[in-house]
Image (cartoon, rainbow, N blue to C red; front, top):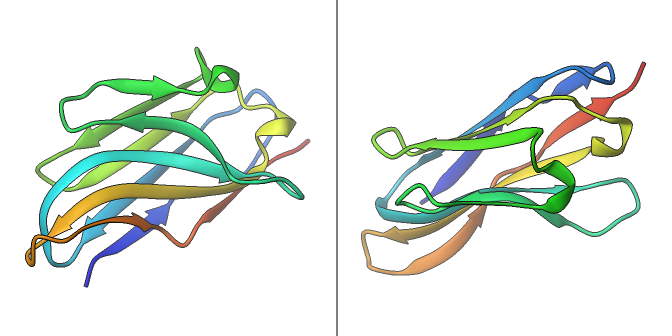
Length: 120
C-alpha cells in the first residue's frame, strides 16, 4: 500500500511564504516524477510544478520565479517552497507521484490535499 502524506499548509498574508512537504511511504520500488497540483475554490485542479527523478523541473507560468520544487530521493519526499504568495494562490494543494510498487505496477498516487489560504 502506497501513501502520500502532505504537510505545511495554512494561512499566510500576501507576500508571505510557506513550505509544503510530501512524503511517500509503503511498498515502493521506484518513484518517477513527483509534483504539486492545486485546486482553487470553484475551479479545476491545475499543475503547479513537477520534478523528475533526475531533478528536471517544470513550473506553471503563474508560479515561475516565486515557487521552487525539490525532492530527496533517499527519503522519498518532495517539497514546494512558495514565496511572494498572492491571494490567488489560495487553493487546496495536492502532492502527486508516479510510483512503481514491489509488484512492478506503476500508478499515479495523490495525497489527501492541504489547504493554503493567502489573505490579510
